[in-house]
View: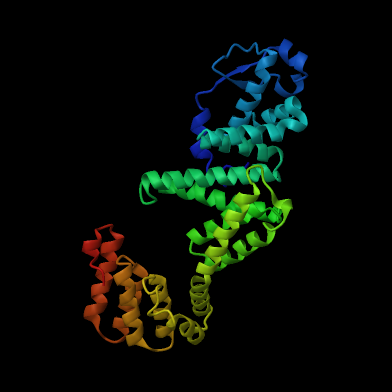
Length: 353
């Protein structure tokens, strides 16, 4: 998070601290608190009171404001000073305190504040299980809430995607650092499922079932009944995944060059409940084309367009098939459709197949 070029979400959090009032603390206060070597000449975020004469009761507020600043903007000019002061002021309680405050903000519905505080906790202890877990949860909930409010195709789409990616990557990191922590696998499985990564979701949920069976995997928010309910839920999900995983296996076989083998797997799903999945037909078309079955490939690509009318990949393949057969009229037709879609015209203008 310290490399701003790689930090996905600081641009969305940093506006939260722009209006904070900053001031240098008095030398007397710095001497009394032993912070001269850390904060001398350093402006600190005081909130509404910028008098620079902080009292003993203000230390906690200053620490939390510092945490918010470095959580929102990890490369802030005084970020290192703030991190040092937080450790100086709170000692071994710094990370638990920030995690607790972050959890309180999340419970109150202020998920951005939770993210800032938890990111600060992770700066102090990048391996903190609770900080990783709650931070990933907060990012997920921001992404889910924005998607519900605006839709991913709206102007908020980039923000939604950034928080979603941050959440998934953090859950992945959590499972690597704390492989016995069941809840990391629970949420990571859903992240993979929502991306259509069915095999990854299956394997991840199998790990959830494995690690959630022991008492060592309790969390601050989990009791036996809740855990049993989650295990029942994921057991059902695993049953539902058997066919999607098999379809994904067939697609992967085709992508790796086993066209006959992959086609044999996918053929079984032509008349199934999954016949409405356009990727099934796209990969069948790819296999048919590679096997020299141009007519079958053409029909499969047209099926793709009935299900996904703006799919330019299918249009391009159809244009190639028609051009190779000498049917320049239809080849030109699909080239025009590609231009219509890429120029942002309506689905009706794109014209389906």
